[in-house]
Length: 307
Image: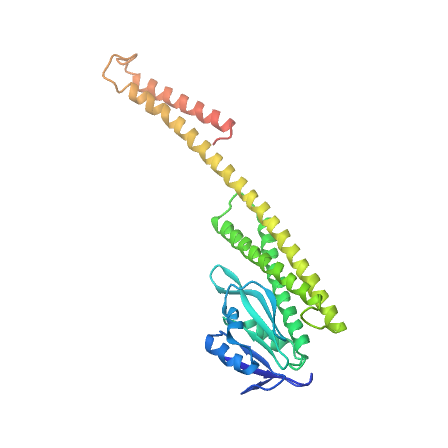
């Protein structure tokens, strides 16, 4: 569904229009082919040039369609299981700016609420602040993951649960997806800085440079977090190995201790002549021998710290 926002003066609020007007911001949430057809008629762009905006897995990039600029970005989102980023395409035309998302995009609603000083008629500045919002979301999510990893590092003990490993694996997957998104986003910013696609003013140039530096910092932060997760995972693996060794030692010791009574009982249970079999104290002798051997084994394994 197409939504039309308009704001000419900084002091004005964002106004929702019922139809298109030059200088508008057109936003399409949960975009469909029908929406793209309507958009193509408004902005005078052939619909086949917009088909990639419906791809939920599109890689960030920038391309030129005649005199218009189409930028594919991705932002942190949990819309689909196993996919932690979502596509957000930004089209800049001579008379409007358009954002297209194939899924429900809460980022746009937050952006409108938080950026009251922007104007829809200032397309480049609006686009750059929207890009800034995306980078801020990445930074916030990366920081959240970093906090969780630090908490797990502080809570390391010998009683590691499988839930901790599962959470760590999920965080690693999220960071890997972030890195694979941030690298092409940085390349998009490099293309913008080259001024090949967009003409920038002095303030816009500074903002793009800040965004470029922020993207590099986010990449480095992801890399640092991934190293911490791998280190933590190796630590968990060592703990699991030690737990397994202790369990094997315990079971081995118990097996040997139990085997002494079993051996003696099986020997004196045979129907053959045996020492002291006619003695009235035979049972107590066998019982004492069994106890002595078992206690000796327990003492031995205790010294070896198997029990």
